[in-house]
Each structure stands twice: as structure tokens, then as C-alpha cells.
Amino acid sequence: MRAVVLTAHGDLDTLVYRTDWPKPAPGPGEALIRIRACGLNNTDVNTRTGWYAKGVTGATTGGPLDGSDIGNPTWGDAPISLPRIQGADACGFVEAVGEGADPALIGRRVLIDPWFRDWADPHTLEKCTYFGSERDGGFADYTVADAHNVHPIDCDLTDAELATFACSSMTAENMLNRAAVTAGDTVLITGASGGVGSALIQLARRRGAVTVALCSEAKAAAVAAIGADAVLPREPADLKAALRGAIGRDTVTVVADVVGGPYFPTLIEALARGGRYTCSGAIAGPMVQLDLRTFYLNNLAFFGATILPPGVFADLVGYIARGEIKPLLAATYPLERLKEAQTAFIAKRHVGNIVVTME
Image (cartoon, rainbow, N blue to C red; front, side, top):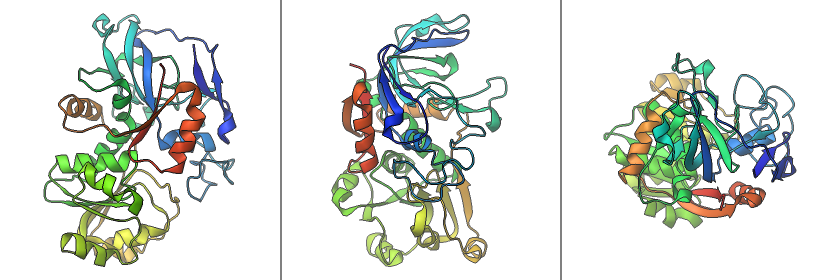
């Protein structure tokens, strides 16, 4: 089969397009899925470059990083085995199932929950692995997945549109769940034009919360069209003044952050007493300054959001099927042009998600 294979941690040349890669076969309890489309996300880039290593202290760049050889270069407790097929946001059709899996899945169009678990002990985080990281993912003609992770979906969206949801929307929903966002909240969203940021706008509004989006001025109109209640420049010099002008008050109850970096202290100062900070990324840099007095004197709560509980992905599939959230497909590329697609993804000139297709 065709596949794009990550052969080492490093630059884009570590991604190798193959036409002779072995086609997988479903084992007990698994489904064989013919992939039709697979979305790109920051985890692909961060894993390829080794950005998760503790020796790396700078922003995500997409290229080789100093310090990536110090500590584990991947998100989990141990380095991944290479070569590896990446890609977490897969949409496709079930072609076969292994022993013990439901044969009714055959022929269904499905999305794949990227978080694989020990289903005898599904809440133990240490036993969770990620599709396209600890196991082969969707940048290929075929993949296999635990049948528990295979979710049929019936709707009018294209395969490419469906491939925009998994990583970004489940990450956003997990961030909002962790911070217990409700209709009484005002949520400040960084990186609002990206996959997770744009999903945060939709999913927070679905809960009835007010959304304030931070993005470049070139993308402001597109972000407003997603449904943000207010759109501010990416890093206002006086954030509190900008908030007063936009929503009539200078604080928010929740910051949903995927950017981190030098602007982090300004975000924290904009939280009201009792406010919550929820984070699932640090593309501007993982090292930040925190005044602990602001943290404890204002009764703030901080939430990291990576591994989500069982059931959240099924909720997300329901939102999609009922049209409660919309796809934001920025561009598509054929599988053999994945490196070009990832170059565009890293440039961050798009709004929403970039997808490769297997057509």
C-alpha cells in the first residue's frame, strides 16, 4: 500500500513516501479501515522534530531543534518506535474485521478515536496510547484500529471535511470539559484561527459561553465568521483595555490556550478571581513566567488537557452528525504531497484544518 513513513526525528526529509509498504491485517477485536482522508495536526510536527524533549525550550518551528536529543522526544513516557506512520485524524471505510469485532462495521464510514486504551482499565492514563504515535496512523491507504475506537458516522460531509475534526475538536472539547465551561463563562481563546482554536470557538459557543478570539489581523474576518463574539489582535499590548473595548469588562473567566510563550503572563493577569486556565499546547514556547501570587491570591485553577476520558469522542461524533459543529477545511493535498501539506500547515497562513486525501 501507499504510506508516508516517519523514519527519524528531524526535518521534513525524515518523511518518506512509499508505495510498497505492507498492508496491515486486523487482529482480534480490530477493524481494517481503508483511509479516505487524514488531517494534519501539531502532534505530527512536534513528534517529527522531537519538540517534546525536555531539552527543547523554544517555539514549534517545524525544523530541527536544539535539545531534541535530551530526554524523550515524544509526548508519552517512552520514545516511539520508528519507522512510524503518523496521522491521527482519519476518516475511512471498514473493509474487514478481526475475530471478536462486530461484522456490522464492515462497509460503514467511520472516524477513529485517536486515544487507544486498555479497555479492561480504560481510565488509567498511563495505559493510553495515541494513533499515529505509539501505533501506526492514517497517512496511508489502510490502517487497523481497535473496534472500540471505530465510530460509524452518517452525514452529508465529505471525507476530507470529516478528517478535520478528530484531533482538534476532541482536544478543544477536553479543554472545555477540564475547565467546566458553561453558559456563564467568557472564554479567551489563543491561536483562534488554528484547528484547536477554531474548534474552541464553536464548542464554547455550543455551551452558551461568550468567546473572545485572539488571532492575526489578516485572519480576523474569517475567525469572526466562525462565530467568535469578539476578535482581538493576536497579542494586544494592553489586553485588559482591548477586552474592555470588546466585551465591556477587562477580565474573562476562562483562558483556553494553545500558544504559551512570552504572552502567557498577560493572559493570566486577564483572568478574573476564581478563573480557570486550560492548556493543550505551547506553539510559541513551553517555558513561561508565572507570578505565583497572581495564581494563589486570585484563586485560579490550571488544567492541562491531553488525554480525554472515554466517551468524549462519541459525544463529538454526535455533535458532527447533528450538524452542531461545522468543518473548517482550509486545503487538501494528495497523500504523496504530505510534506508540502505540512509545510503549509507550519506556515500558519490558513484558517481551520489541512487534510491529505488518498484519492
